[in-house]
Image (cartoon, rainbow, N blue to C red; front, side, top):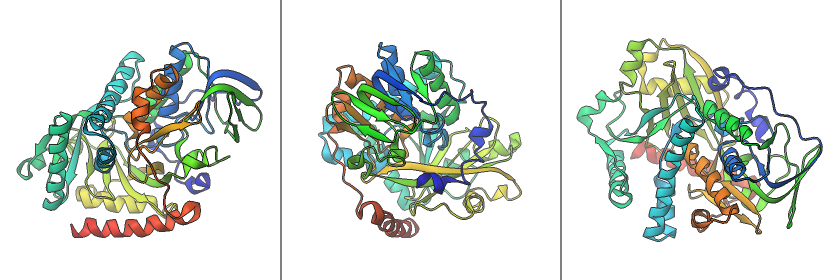
Length: 434
């Protein structure tokens, strides 16, 4: 059970400690009828519900915990274009060049959608423009350059190369050889953004129920979703629970087997002096490296270093998250040796086997959105919008992503984790040898 594995690593989240949540929405305790029922109160579910409500649909949203409780409220806060090099390669391999370009353009539209929602709904979420992809070795820089050239030439999306001679103008670390700067992507406080989106969704008239996990999904022309104390019947369903869809009633086993929960962990330092913050990240860009098991980090609005990584494919939470992440942080920034860690937390992201988004339909009226593979902050919101478009009769963008074929993880429910651990050992070795 994922919920059991997460105990002890979710309570000390900097994000939760830096927001003031509203009182919880009610628990579903009776029978409701709706045009659409959305399962999941993260970016994708809230986005779909908001879009549909603003078009006049009667929408019910069911969240098993609190809004933004999962990855939408605990992630690294990086708002990234595209799907990562592996996801993009999978899309290019399966789709035509023209369709690959359309898929990329949808991800760019996801950035625009996020920016427009921040402005339209006045969401105070500490947005800062600019992200860096950094290579730790010259060989890794060759790979990064090839990716940036492809993105620039094929997708017409501008990137700036950071040469070894200027890398210290961007980051106060000797660990990196060079990098690529993306001025259109950025970073923000993910929980503030999610809760702001939730406020807009509630104001649009969506009926939100928290602490109401769906235990049974009965499929048909009218789908019926049953919780412990109530039920919803709806013409359409949007499943946006990602790794938690199988947590309670395994609502869609034929698709939940196509994603794997991967643990990732973050620490937040004490507030840094203005001088130290400028030394670490002079331009306050968000950073991720190019290793398969990557580090990612950024400065918060109150000048803490938020440092994440250490993806755990074993399904087990490391014994000492804070100590392990501190060691990784000091490999990048040894000057923080006397800096306190005040928060540490973690959670699970939904990884697809080919690292590309997995969207589709079950029958004619159940839509699912999953497989964001670490690129969900912008794309999950866009996924909710294109699912809403499809329900409203404009399905071109949704159908484009539904063309992408996905496989189940090898080994089935019980053996896929050992198989992935073995595979990750191999990729860690490649990171070391490359």
